[in-house]
Length: 347
Image 1 (cartoon, one colour):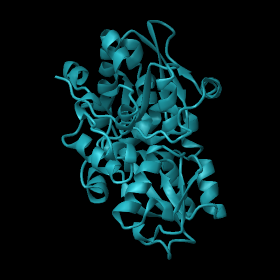
Image 2 (spheres, one colour):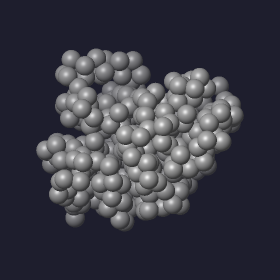
Image 3 (cartoon, rainbow, N blue to C red):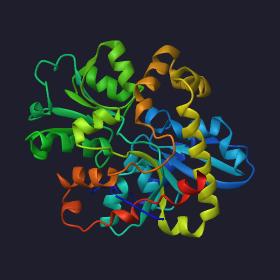
Image 4 (tube, helix red, strand yellow):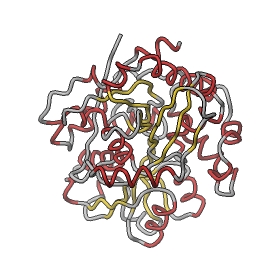
């Protein structure tokens, strides 16, 4: 049985020139992580390897599950999902670990891309406001005139910020999205006043709260938080691939999905501390307790079987239609944006 749902809003600058993409890939290679060097070679671009929302990518490798499936997986990293997506469209990698919503917008641009295993049922994102601006921004209704941080234009943080604004009566041209990345650059922008608030994920969220540099305005790290903010489950982090490649390499895709589903099941039966212990030491940035807490806060977003949550694609389409003219003016076939074929076989 096959289903799909795809959206991805590339900003005008989203489709990078091949030369720029090559540079991105070369930069990403500096933070590459590879498997045993044996087996079928697969390159996967991750929209931020150290982000907790994409934790299953590195964890699968650390647990040895790619190797167990006879795969030699090379994990590359780009800090913004839209750049990771562009690398996939350019054919530089075979898969992207990023937000499912990119598959919808890509469909409106004539690109057939589908999620083959769904890691999550909530965005895992948090809208943070700086401590200084907390008195002026008490809900998304107060976004008007504010500078709000996102990873990059056309990213999922951009999409979700726009939806929160529109849903609360603020037009997308009434606030300023500011591309500040994630991690240290986001925190610095918040502390220096370059942004009044913004959308980010753990471990950045945990660090901001620990430093008392900001406060949580909207928390979408749990299914309940997603329901409250977005009106339903919001499938986000996933492995998505070009449909033609999937159809031509089903055995390899099945092995990838087997490995990821095995990881999701492992995560569902282990504590945040046990998960943190498996990750690269530098991911904790010297504070293992804080890193463990960031994993604990985000764990509720993950599925334990890789299956697309019921009504998830419809929620994503509704969110995108609120502000995305590409989606508003297109007849998106959600059944082509994801497939359950491989996760069902993995079970």
